[in-house]
Image (cartoon, rainbow, N blue to C red):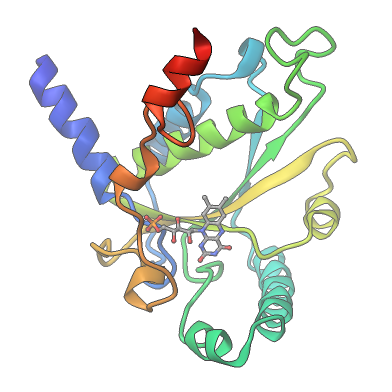
Length: 223
Ligand SMILES: Cc1cc2nc3c(=O)[nH]c(=O)nc-3n(C[C@H](O)[C@H](O)[C@H](O)COP(=O)(O)O)c2cc1C
């Protein structure tokens, strides 16, 4: 593959990727494909090469049903915190595909991996968590490239998942990911389709030189 084709393929996967909740078919995934995607996740950059993530593959219906009950309850907690109008907008929004997806992948973070001298983490403890999130994003893009879908579920309390999956106390469940074949990937994020929130233009996120972008006065005060 030449550089242009590679760039096209990468940008295409990035733009096709969606958070999936409603479109899972529940069809099986070939083990070799699942393994390829996990290798991609495990290839993520990590602070001090700590690779602080683990992937717990959850297919058991009973475990998933217990998690789904917990998530439903957290959904209620969130809904009850909303003002009436936001609560109405929230009603049709699906926040998970736990039972419909083919597989749950719980990605965890172990702060002791490679510790105590994690190169690059002495000043920013969160760098380990950032690394774990990069593994998740690699998995998300790999799933998209395979024609699958993935959805991140964060409507849970960490101690519940720690207990459900028997995690050591120090290990944090960073994400419950719903993974598998899908009918299609939506072109527009669910939250935008349901008028929860619109995407921000990239121009609003780009700042020149300083947060305020006030290049001229900043330059003057530097002198
Ligand atoms: C840290 C994190 C947590 C998220 N938690 C949930 C969740 O609990 N339920 C859900 O439906 N989507 C969840 N999402 C997906 C976001 O809602 C989604 O990424 C966003 O609306 C943009 O849509 P897109 O991913 O399709 O571009 C989460 C995403 C991230 C990065």
